[in-house]
Image (cartoon, rainbow, N blue to C red):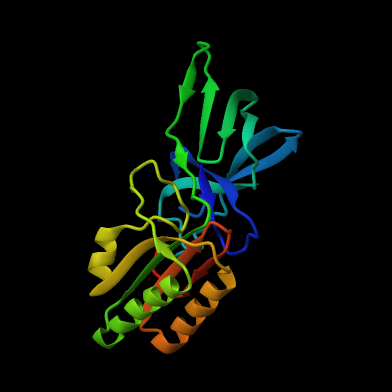
Length: 233
């Protein structure tokens, strides 16, 4: 599970990422499913794996990988959701727990005991996460100026402990990757209670004046993400 802050959503969404144990001929093969909801009960049916016979990535069936799919649950209010997963005529009963700070999935197995999976730390409210870097020395000052501008408009540095339990989409980055990709970069998290449109305007202005020499992504708990097209993932 992950909590997505994708820019296509007006609010925060929960998503389930599923993949197969089996490797298929092409990494583009996808899991076919149907998702329905009756009241608070979520029903997920895995139907099959779609194999087009060629890879969209290279045109050949030579890039083996697990079939996978991202399933969007939409926004979920705090509570407990019965969660039924059906595959090959067999249904497993789960429970999805959601509260203001964490969400996690557990279920009763055939022995009647509960298995609890790693919890997912949700993105705290009123936060901004910024990852920004460049290889161009002449652009270093733009990074510091942009971060200073955020603080002028009320953003306050917010230290967060990062670890394997964090599952923020667009929120946690690999610092070792950033260090090899850029000669200068900053990765910061802020508490922000102001107007998010101001932040987006600052980010848009930064993209213009950086002349595509500076890559950055900016995430907010408000469900809106600003991301340069050429930012590497």
